[in-house]
Length: 614
Ligand code: ADP
Ligand code: MG
Image 1 (tube, rainbow, N blue to C red):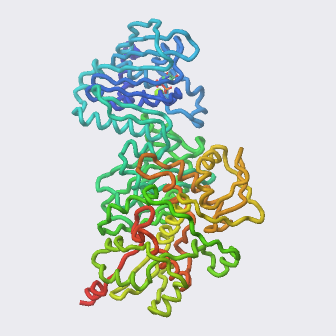
Image 2 (cartoon, rainbow, N blue to C red):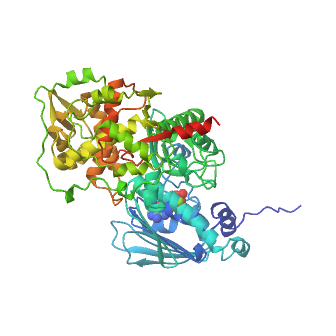
């Protein structure tokens, strides 16, 4: 029998291989965006026409290519990213197969314009169905533009297989999201049929999420952060109440590469157990970093699945970390009372007449004595501004059906002198108790009030700190031995920016430069041992802060500090402390909500109880 085996011509081999890499316009989008990232672009623009069926074009300001590289880039297995098989286990780039451009050029009309930093003149190359049509010098800016026109023009079967424009556009947007989320520091723009779809400036990860999914997203995010020897996890989960029936926003990135992993998804879902109904899926944006040697990306042609060496540990860590974040950020169910819109605006001191600060400095003040008296909790202020405690309860009694009515109570009454707990004990005989070291339960005339101790304390501290920052009346406690702390240069710069406000709260910085901070005085409100955590949390919060969400920097600062300093869940409070906390809470301007807009307390009416016994 005659020999029958022959080698397929290149263009046929390329067409067949293209089927693996390019299923639809979105595949082209993914490959081109990833090449732009690999070329270290800081700004990337995606232009599509007719859902990418007519045109997919990506322009970047990255490294560009030399004349020879421009031509070579379309050869199969032509890549600048790996040299040997070992490199596969130390990947720091998206691409490595050297197949994308060859595959795309086999099934479309492709135009490439590119120039490197140091060459005077760039290259303009056109290819159709793997055949180079022209290659000329061209005057173009540094970077690369690749235009892919008429996808599948030579494979009508594939072209007919494409879905409707809305469906294909959806796929493109999904790919765009994945790359944009993984690289928040890169600016991305997307235009479809001439109009802007996305315009994402370089930012941090939280801002990127908000810029993509809308400003409402900001308040839904719960930060997640953990670092161990084998794994670093950063990112956000959506609060349980924002889970969706359909799979909503679920993103895993491993070393900045979007991946799909039912196994890790399970880890996250199980961390939400008990917080969501069974048919609701959690939302998440989780960025995992692992040693590139410990993963294998090579098991799927389009590289959205990877294999971890130590899958079980990663599962366990992920689950624990998400659980911890949900717990730490007090994801309690939101009460559905209608909140007064006015609650949303914090203080507006600008509209108030400045009053001379009238703080009475306690000359005998001794933080240690104070601490001893109050256990390990610092109660911030010695003065109380409240009406008598009983009258609050009367107010509540009348208003139990409409808690917002509390907002109408005028708290800026005359200062009450004398001890408020004494009032409470002797005049009204109130008794309180603590539930699970988390809630303070206090009887009302018509039922009971259940106060979340951490959120209540946050509210108290927040108002006090905001006042200190704005009217600058805080008192410092001088430290016997100045605190020396070390931060990164960047973090020090951040602290420098809010230095003035921090000094208003009572901090005294004797040195703030390079990578060290020396602190010689701290606010009376806090313990020395909490300072490090507080500053770390503050820097973290400032980095994550999304501007333009209507809150001022002072507000953010007060929120962050209040969250760090507040009594945590799990701390046991004695009777005095409980009642002091309640007094302080109701001396606040907005005792009903925490600085982060969570309800601080709820009430239970006797009639509610009665119903349970019917
Ligand atoms: P891979 O990304 O797997 O290396 P590709 O076919 O996507 O393979 O690209 C081939 C080569 O072309 C890349 O390795 C890179 O050197 C070069 N290249 C592709 N796109 C760009 C770009 N936007 N900027 C600079 N170089 C590029
Ligand atoms: Mg590539």
